[in-house]
Length: 259
Length: 310
Image (cartoon, rainbow over all chains, first blue to last red; front, side, top):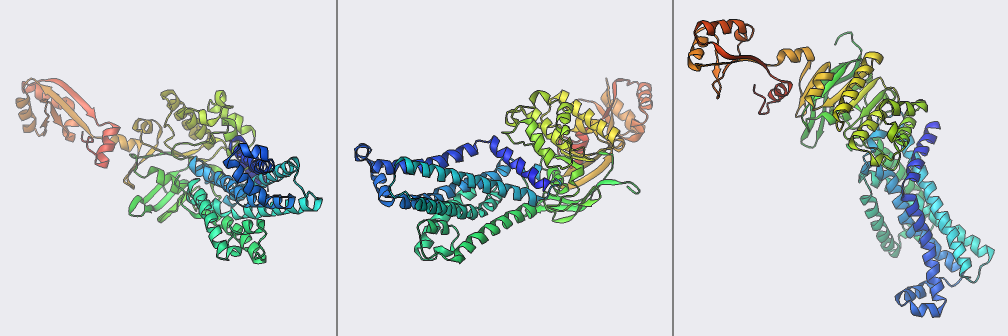
């Protein structure tokens, strides 16, 4: 346990000293702020008229978020898509930076098990992503209150918050394989590229009716209130997370490290 | 090395990348407390060997044993007692020198927290201790890499080009530091280098690697003996002198500038007799010098690279 605590300390220190938490934190602030701003614009015709194209986008959003329940559903969809990319960035940085900065070699011939090092990284990724999700939720709730959305019952807000957090949890679980992609690709490009591909594929697979079994489609479908999701859908996401963690561990244990 | 405790041992160690044979059939032994230098050109296979010894890459043939432990990929042993430096030392650029060393300390459980300040002092990094590693010069980054390798008081140091990037004063300082470690604490040093002068001043034994193969292993004394010597003579009458020497059983070559070159042991071991012979024949030497092949020439001759012929 001491070794794991030490490895977590190392990962936290590296993260806090970098600019990446500031960047991801800012992004997680801007997503709900942006959505709230567009809804605010759409609900105020005098501002909307002055903003042209923005007002068109705002109108589209406003139609889908007319009250708290719809607004929280919209926030969940952001957690499924926008936040997913943020989580991919986090996991890619935590794992990929060791390769791109050439620091991996100093973690290899050490008396700490590689499993502990990899686990500590996953713990930091999960906590970091969870913090970003909470920031998005809290800011979303605050903005919803500020723009005075109708239908703000305690139940609607509570249910909506639960949906946002559950979607975020599924998104966080679904990014575990990106640690493997960052390790194999020895940097950030491969995981980010695959993340784009995964979301495009998720849309196609969902249209074909198989989205419930595609791990990167499940969070989005949950956010949209799809009824086709089953217990198997959640199992697929959990298995994807486990497979991602195991593949990463296996790769760190057995692949040649030449950098 | 019968009866000796070995710190490093490889047996027919090999590593291939596709068709490229990075290291082939490498068998060497390094005794405990010894300074062994791996000498070779860039791309000779030095770094691959070091990565094989550290369990960073899987051998395609043979085995490596470090501190009596068979090296395996992903294993935790024997790294608590090994310090290393591979290629250009890298540090977390956003962390300070002290924080980077704190990271290294936690990667070696059991190392006292005070060890960080101690190694900062020993490697003269105090001035830069609170500076971000990303702003360090190459030389100071190298010092930080060495500090990380030494932090946990290892019994074996595996160092890839440890003098790289250091200024002349730094090279002398690190050399002395490594010598003190071996003499006072019995630390074993396995290091690679392509800087021949550095090797000559530090190593007790040298392994010469070329194109992935260990060409020769020799002690510094053997190296001295193996280096070619030649007797160079200039006289006012080269032709007559040449004839005199040849008739007396001292084969000589005439170089482009008219200098006579003698390589036979009979001449090299008795330059005084050669001198007397030429004086008696009326062609006294105007210049007589014994020239010894330097380390660089010896090395180049051994690996068959032009410029090595003395």
